[in-house]
Amino acid sequence: MIYSQPQSNMTPTKASTHTPTGGFSHAMRREIYEQPHAIAKTIDQHLKNDILFPGELDPIESALLTFEKLIIAASGSSRHAGLAGEIMIEDLSGVAVDVEYASEYCYRSTHAAVEPIVMVVTQSGETADTIAAQREALTRGVKTIAVSNVAEATIPREASAALITGAGPELAVPATKSFTTQVTVLYLMALFLARKRGRMTSEVTRSYLQRLLRLPEAIESNLRIWDELAEQFAQKHFRAEKFLYLGRGVHYAIAREGALKLKEISYAHAEGYPAGELKHGPNALVDEKLPVVVLATCDKRDPDSVLRYRRTLEVMKEVKSRRGQLVTVATEGDTEVSEVADHVFFVPAAPELLLPILEVIPLQLFAYHVATEKGYDVDRPRNLVKSVVTE
Image (cartoon, rainbow, N blue to C red; front, side, top):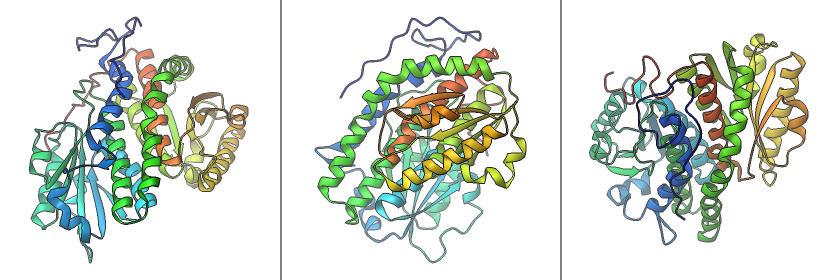
C-alpha cells in the first residue's frame, strides 16, 4: 500500500525555522504526517510474499537457532522503542529480553550464563554510546543486529546483520517517524521469532501481519483530527511547568516517549511512570496545576488488556479526585474514559501490541503544540543535536 506525501495549508506557527518543511510550519510536524508512508515502507522492505526479513538475518542464522536471550541496547527515543519491543517479543515469541541503556552496556556483565544476541537500535547509526555498545558486544563474541534509519552508517555496517527502517531523512531533532518505524521493525521481529520458535503458525502470523498492514491507513485518516485536538489541549496546558505521563504494560514505553518529546521541545519537566506506581511517590505531585497524560487504550478481545484498562481507569479516578487535569489517549467508542478525563484523543481499535504505534502520534502532536504555543523552535531545541556522536 503506497501513501503519497502529505500536503498542508496550515499556516506557520510562532517559531518559524529555515528547515525545509514542505508547506508545514515545521519539519517536525511534516515528519509526524509522514508516518503512515514511513510505516508502510518499513513493512514493505521487510515482508516479501509473507516471508519476514528475507535474507536479511542469514548472516546470524546459526545464532538464531541457539541464542537464549535478546539484549537491546539503545539511547533516548530508541530505548523507548526497545522497551515496547521487549514486551512485544517476550509476549509473542517467549524469548527473554533485557533492555539496556547503550551508555551503560559496556560497564555491565550482561551475558552471565546465557548465549545472547545483542540488538542495537539507533536513528542515525552513528550514536557514540551505541557504537561503543555494539563493539563491546562483538568483542565478547556476540552476534549483533542493528536497527537503523541510515543503511550506510557505522552501526549497520559493523553489525552482524542490519535491519533498516523506512523512515527516510528525519531533519527535526525530535524523533517521530524514526521512532514509529523502529517499533514497527521490533514488532516484525517479534512475529519472526514467534514463527521461528514454533509459537505461532503461518496462518496466525499472517493474521497478525494483516492487522499491522491496516495501521498506516488508520493513522492517515486520523492525523488531522489528532492535530486539531492537540492544538486545543495544548492551549489549555502550555503554561504548566510539569507533566506526568502514565501507562501500563507496553504502554509504559509510550508514556516514557511522550514525556521525553514534551521535555525535549517545550522545556517543561515531564516524567513517564507505570500507572501502578502513582501511589509510590508521584501522587504527591498531583494537584489542579498538574496535567496527567494517561494511556488508557484497550483491546477488548484481550483479557489482559481489559484488566490493565480497568486498573488504569481506577488510577484516573484517583487523579481526578485530587483535581489533577487528565489528558487521555483512549480507544474509539470508549465512553467510560470520557466521563473521567478532561481531554481525550481517540485512536482506532487495534490489537494490544499494535496500540503503541497509534497512541504515540497524538502525544507527538501534543508536545509539538505545547512547544509552539510557548514560541520555541521545535526542530532545533536548545542543547540537543540529531545524533550524539560523543560519549
